[in-house]
Image (tube, rainbow over all chains, first blue to last red; front, side, top):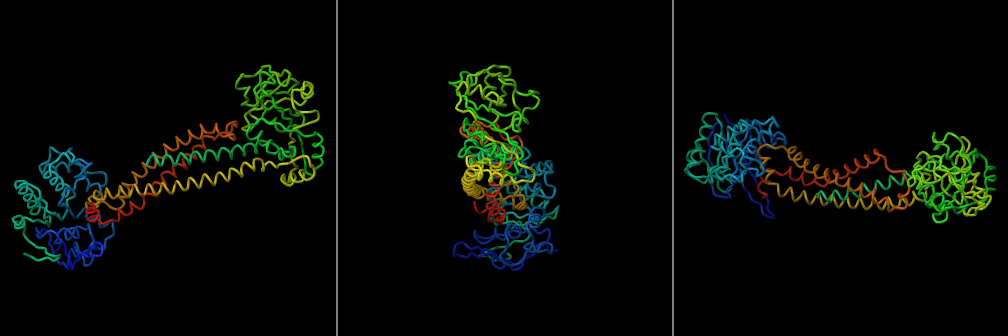
Length: 224
Length: 374
């Protein structure tokens, strides 16, 4: 069953008098429960494509259908709800808010969701324990290592029980052991909960662990 | 930014308090006077307003014959007269410089309403009443005190109710004392002279028209309708108002720019953070709410600081304004509350207006672009 369908997606940035075609006519079908990796050089448009799927940037042209509905035509409230409830986003950089503790960062998606302020603190603690940070619940990002911050971001991405996880180099600055643990966690969620995974990586070994592998170059996409 | 909003609001509170207070002094005086028309010697209108509105100690006189001339004017119902005597500290020993008002108890309709139950009888010769805020009243503690006025002994037998006008600091005696005062020769007034005539017009008559008729017919007097009392002060006040409000308006515009600049910088600095929040599901309304709380906090705290400072300044500086320092008519709690609320609304409003554009720009930014802005 097709969960996400990209039809002829293009994204053009204008910087001064220059136009940069970050994504150029990409069409792709992703089924529910797919485990997909995207590789490519820096500047090949991987992050932009992932952001378009996640609804955090609108394409210049083309359509993104999620369960048959075009997310590009949604108003802000519905698009925000889509990002909040359907998508779990992991950025390639540390993306935790510095003034919040690990638990508060994990709780953020719930605060912006329909439950509002009645956030489930226990669930946040369970996710933090699941990523091995049960003893760092009250720690601030500045008190955590890069790898630990990355794991808090993973817990945050899982908090609202998303149907799709979009991960931009999720294990980029982690040691091999942690990288393996996180990939195991992704695979477990994918097989047990049918969560769709799309992740970007430079690590070909990691990319090969995915069920489908794609390569991006100069804004275009090819299946490997 | 809190300090700048505080300064602006304090200026606004001061201006509003000043304008309202002067305006209320004039209105209170006019409303409580009990007469429709004031008739003073030609050229003495300003001095009369000085006494009634500002408690200045002045004297002016005209011939009593003017009373009969005024009485003949059509539509005049009642007349009563008063004579203002200036008691000078050094001259009359133990009384500070004060206006002493000699009034005719038989025809009076100006003082009577403020006698209340204090005396309950006619004022006798050699007796005096003091205004509620009279210098004597405050310094001596009254009543039943004997004081020398113009070489004559007077017994202070009562205190008038507060009128909120210049009469509150005066001393009142019956006209029958004038002969003794004149005999001692310690007052400037001469035999047969009075200071002011108060007139009431017949029902349905227009006091302004009647006042005009008096001025035209009786050459030695100048008649002023009650609603025109303090007109020159009000005109000056209106000009001052314009200057004040132009200054406050310009300061408000500058404050809006300041808030805009500060919030633009804050929005740039926090674009990444907002981008992350938007990426995980924050709606535009969440971003607005987040910033609005900060804006209202800054505006609210700044305004409260300004209201306190402005009120303190208006109370302290009032002593330096001739128009305000002697009069008793202050601002009531409700007036002060309304000024405070208006100033609070202005202070927070300026913050909200200034911050609107940066907040709108930030919340409309696509999350990825906001994140990359860093």
